[in-house]
Length: 212
Image (cartoon, rainbow, N blue to C red; front, top):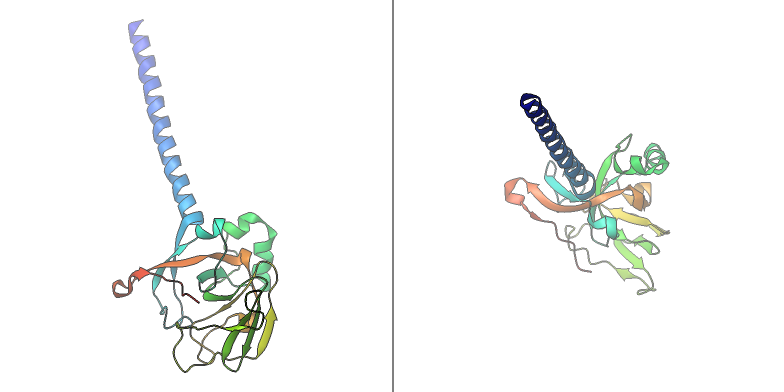
């Protein structure tokens, strides 16, 4: 009788141990999923469109958490899904595609220069923003671009709700495919903002947003 009780206790103890291990592993996996899809993710720069702020093959960490409770600010460097028709259809179809599944989308990195409700005017090499605070327009002092390189283009765009206008920091001719070429960026395409340059080691540091 005692042997049966002992065997039963051992079986129950083993079952509890297995359950505790499974629960711990499940908790770790859940934490990793949350961190990966809602907090941070890695991103590798491809191309020269953001020079001199970012260079080809640099490895950065993207902050996805800040935009869960807030919206992009002017000057933020954002990583987003390029809003081409196939990607728009994929992203707009459901929330899970927007968060978890890459689908046919390509990821881009650019800087936010105009916000929802504003009007952006690109003319004579300058970026001019019209809004409630500046109804006559404010020429952006873009210290992050190289001197003596004008912003090419001649257009005026009024942004609607949840719409952004983004540009590459490299304003040399044909250096950046951005909102001047393909139009506005919907907010639901934005993944997060550049937080840290991780590699190479000599470039390690926090990514600062400019003060306008």
